[in-house]
Structures are given as structure tokens and as C-alpha cells.
Length: 408
Image (cartoon, rainbow, N blue to C red; front, side):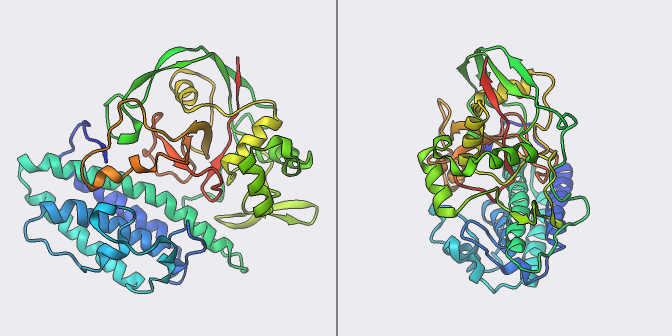
């Protein structure tokens, strides 16, 4: 569920935005073959076809069924196939088996999307002013939800293609291979000093936000320093050359166990290429670029690197304060998501909404770590300084990187 005290859009403006977001999902899926869109390369990855269908099911379930008079669902079995985790809506197909769903076909999913889009357009052009506010709020949530899945679609497709020995490329127009270097990445990172104090943190009610971004509240933040840019591939190579993956004293217990069990010796998608390292990107296999920000590292790796560097990871409150008050910081929300030292927990006063949409964020506030910022494939306009992304500590397939912090 999301905060709904944002300025309501007119039906016309909402229709335009709806069309743009839905079309972007199809554009992201466009470079993939029908066969690409069915593969599930690990349990955490969802097939492209499933993302396209699930985001459509979201609008059908939460917008059309309760608000479009006489609407009939496209297929009663889609509730089972394309419900992600909403327990209150009934049983679901097991997540690790989404790659077994060969039917409906990708063409049938396209038809499903088109049919639901038409029904949403009909609803928005006929709904009365009294009901528009509720419908608009639900559609707004659905669009932000779909933007989340747009990034998931890309990172999942990258993992799928990486498992193919032919090393196929994804690379649609407008999507770079990897995040680019910072203007200051040729030399050591600088430090930006941030004053401490009792600060206001969280979303303040101006514009859209997910419910986990509030309530706005006060936190005590001691004076600290934040690196002006992200950690680079070149700096990560130095960590590796200094035995970073072989030194247990650098790692949390769970991190060292993950290194041993997963045989980690480099970030995900890195592989030896003679005397150098190569990286599987959205445009295929390429040499590791030393000045580019490191990505596809877990929280466990980020924590070990920070310890090796004589620094630490910022808390999410520190990151937010710096992002909203400090000058001189680059790569805040356009390169990679940045691990923080903060566990994903509810803010003081948080209460999940009633109903199935209340399951959107709150029930995952356990065994996850918060990331802040945004990545080079995050949809434009989707992030804000209060945005709280989250993943389990060992997760590596997301576009995640590192910004260092230190005590003042």
C-alpha cells in the first residue's frame, strides 16, 4: 500500500501516464525472444513473461474488479498464476516454479495486457468525479508498482542471459551496458562532512511515496562523513588483489559462510579473461572498466570492503540527510543502489494498511537490508531521497553497489 495524500491527477493526465508506463514495460521486453521470456534461471528470478502478466493482474485485481461495473476477469486461473505474495487473495503458484508456466504464451500475455489496458481506459473515461479519487490512487500505486517491476525485469533478464554460453546481448536502445564513471573517479574519493543533530527522516506527505517511507520522524545522527562518489571497479580490484575474498577477519560470520559456500572471489558476472577480468553486461561480455562503479555486490561484500577500506557503510538516515542537505555528492540515484548499514524495519508509528494491499511492504520487514538511491535502469522519476529499497544480505543480482561513510 502507498501514501495517497498526493495531488490527484485528472483522468486525462492519468491516462497519459498509464499509457507511458505500460508501453515502457513492453519496450523493455521487446529485445527478448519468446523463449527468453519463459526462462527462470534461479528461484529469485522471475521470467519476463511473468513480470508482464503480474503487473497486469495487479491492475485487474485492485482496480478493475472492485471499481469497473460488470468487469469479468480475463481468466480465473490467472489469480493463481500471477499473484505474487498477497496471502489474503488466496493460494499462489510457487515462486521457484514460475519458469514452468509455458502457458499462457507470450502472445497471450500481450493480449491480456491489451485487454486490461482497454478496460482501464474505459473506466477512467466513464468514472464519476466522486469515485475518481479512489480509482486514481489505486492506479497511481499500480504504476509505481509496475516501475519497480521494470527494473526487476531488466535485472532478471540479465541473469537469464548470463547463463547462456552464447553470451547473448540484451541492449535495447537507451539502456547502457553498465553504469558510467563519476567525473571524479580518476582519483581517490573525496569526503563530504555532514553535521549531526536531531533530524527529520522519512516522507513528509508531499507527493507519492510507498508506505514504508513514513511516517516522518526524528532521529539522532552524529556528525559523519560520506564519500562523494561510489566505490569503483578499480578499487574493488585492489580489494581482491589484497586477498579480500580470502581474509576471514574482514567478513561478518554470514558473509564468510557465503564466500565459502558460493565460492565467491569477485562480484557477480565477473570472470577471468587472461590476466584481466571481464564482466557480463546488458551488452554482452566486456572488459571490467576500472573507473565505473562496482555493481552486483551483496551487502555482505559491501560490509567487508568497507572494513578493508577503514570505513563503514552509512546508515539510511545518514544517507538521506546527506542526499537532502549536502553539496558535492554525485551518483546518488543514477548509477547503482547503495547498501546501507540499516536493517529494513518499520519507522516509529508505521502501520500497514488494511486489506491485501497492506501486504505490499510491511510483512517483509525482517532479514533484509535497506538500499538507497537508484540505478541506471531505475525508471526516470521513480526515486526520491526517502525511497527505501531492500534485499536480503546475500543478494547479488540487483544493480547494487557501495558508497563509504566514516565517523567525523
